[in-house]
Image 1 (cartoon, rainbow, N blue to C red):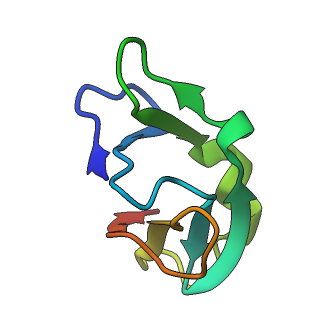
Image 2 (cartoon, rainbow, N blue to C red):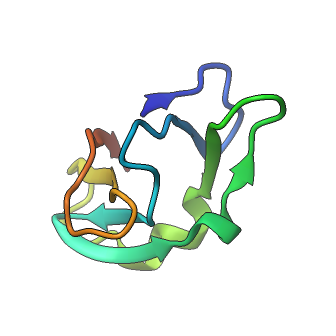
Length: 96
């Protein structure tokens, strides 16, 4: 999984690269709490590759951000391997 650079505004974009285990679902965590689960059908298929694109509008996540003003809110995105409970390499980021 890798972030896609050149993202505008409040949009986080990630390229998910399935390996031999395939891609099951993708989980989004805020402050270490599972917030959303995305299925393959909710992801964009990247043209001419086996990769997927996950786009997350942070405006839809604002209700889940808690804490004192000025604190960073960690967001973690973790893909699951198809047919199992094994996680692929995730990606952490911080968003206010």
